[in-house]
Image 1 (cartoon, one colour):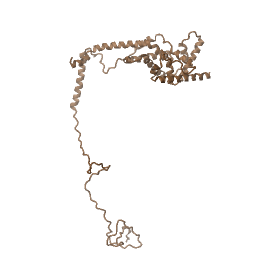
Image 2 (tube, chains in turn orange, brown):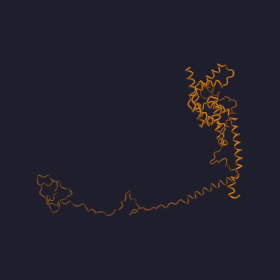
Image 3 (cartoon, rainbow over the protein chains, first blue to last red):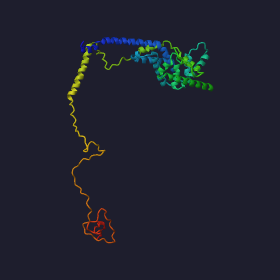
Length: 197
Length: 179
């Protein structure tokens, strides 16, 4: 094969490249569908912990997977897809939370009473539990941002401190110190509110 | 799942109630049909294909390799022709005329001049003689009346040789008596 033939052979193989590209696209779509099946629930819970609204959380999950679809070329470079997806949805919900207006606490109470499991509870107990949870969440909202984020992610038992550090882009020791501060602050806030009641 | 158990209550005591709330939310089950809705939204999303610098128009989309080769050859020909046209029209710049001055070397040798600036020699102008000795006034010396104000003697004018000190006094015009 001469040099010119070698140069032009790349153009001659255009049909094969097209076939390869189509096959690769199908492969990527299948991979994304697998990610949706595997991690949609986890991402929804992460989103709900911040948004505290079912519709908003579902929108955030959809937007996160749309971002994945846009960057599907780099999908094979991702080492830990679960942490990567949680990081994406975490950024999505933080963006949305920043843009959205703060909802009144009564909305949280109603939403929590609707979604939280209440097996064997009377209507009064369910309302009281929802009130308590909403009260706790209002205290969480008063924490500094860094401590609050670590505290909320620490509630997910499937996330280790290393993974939380990866989601937040900080070191593991920072996660531990922030978590310690957050717990102390929360204890103080709850005691203060109890003394007021 | 959580091997080191860092998410459990470890530091502050009496904080279990609020962590229970957070854990309760973290364990919420996803709503029914979430996966299907997400997949449907992904399918309906307008995802742009890979960006191309120059996309072929749909009507002219090349189906054969020879068309791509011909197009590439035409682009190469246009680029070469254009650059040749520019090259043939543009005159190369004249070499810049520069004059080189030889470095000044002091006559004494290679020692520096210690910052002294050399002033160029100018054309010969009028030669200034040495400062002339102040001469006495051309007029004959007049006797100075004693009432007149004594005239300051010029310090630069030394007494002329061979004359008395009084005769060598210079009378300023302002001190002359008016008629």
